[in-house]
Image (cartoon, rainbow, N blue to C red; front, side, top):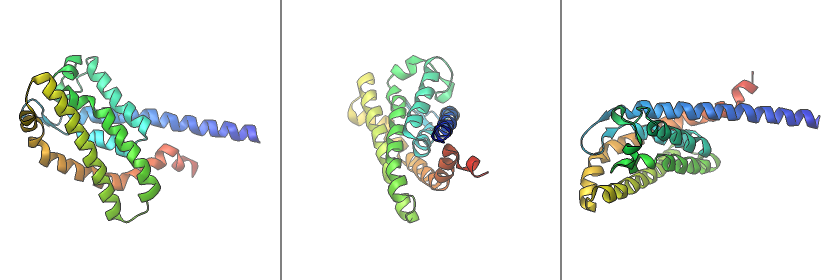
Length: 206
């Protein structure tokens, strides 16, 4: 009996791991697609890629979230045109705006870790409490994005802090606020269902 139970647990883990790998690929692809929805307004384009990065961290386990964004960066580095404007190459990461891309795995991992507390403490709480928590951690992630990307931009472009803010932060504030609102709404409605898929509950109930 114990052997059969062990084999059953191993099978469940294998299926869960397979789902995780598939979701990594799916979210890397989503990031690539949303990155092409962009408007070039300066050194850093207005892009929808952050929506994909946020959702990767909000919906996937930490390991899968980091891996999904690492895969996205790897694809772009080796020449697949997944960066905004169908760009690719290591030079894109090493350039003045590369810092905003390099923080993607950090952002997704940070959000995924924060979502562990969400699942333990807030999943069954009032809508307002869940929305407030999601908004707070997304603002934290955005701050990390701004800090890492802007510091990188200053080092590699030679611009002052004020110039960097004017070029790479201030034009994006309104759009980034809208992205956060969109991700909060989507996460509240989709996370529980995705967790069921990851754990195979739907298959087990059939």
